[in-house]
Length: 357
View: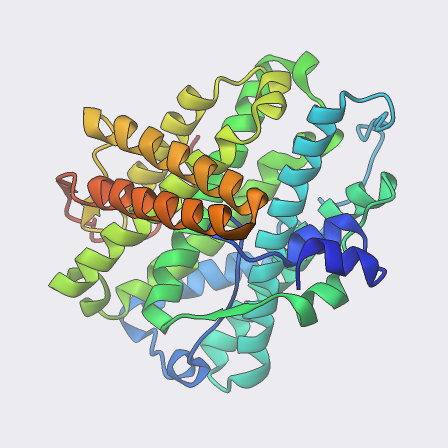
């Protein structure tokens, strides 16, 4: 169902946008829940128990509440392009958060393993808060996402459990890196705060960090998940995919980043650097973001994706042929990024990290 059809059916534009499933949109996932239920956390029991105790204490139980720091937002007088891009940022973030909530809640519902069920229960709780907080902000503008409809209308992508680990670990850790980088920038430049939700990012991103820690421990229960040749190749794939999608998506929001006072290229490079440093805790390979081929390849991919979007909008035979040509250029650009030599690393004995940025 496309966005226009959703609107005709009485669904608002933000809900329609959230239901879209393209290469750049956050996805809803399903997996082999029985395999997840069989995980034995004995090899990481000490660190696991410490993490679960921290999550059980619920450090952010009082955080997602509006206080006097929540300023009113004048949506009506906001520059139209900035408004579109801010809404796009918020809807994309909400969809990603709610995607985690749906996946984690399903695991809790289906599972019987007490360790795994307790973990996913806490993560579902956190992600529900995040999504609800963003939706409250959208509700102020009269454009809240219908989360019940989203659960039914959004397409689900099946991933094997190990792919869920790679994708979700990176999603949580890059989410932390993105949020904390924006938050630290706005600490220095409070005049650039374009919406009060950014004031909540510090503790918020610590939830993301803890969730990433959980997936790091899950991966450390079985060395084959990160040390086999096929696993290293797949980890490399997911690193390139997550980084390149972020790059393309961020460059589609120039007014948003300009209003924040953030130069997109420098910001993305900083987020890639932080995520790479963090991911050394469990991944044996790291993207060489300083290789000149990296930036050049990202730009080729971005231009190809723009061409694909233009062709899609054009429609008809010409649009179809344009999409095919742009798709081939996108695949070639992605392959070029994937083939850049990676840096090797040896994960530390102690897998736990603390947020330090």
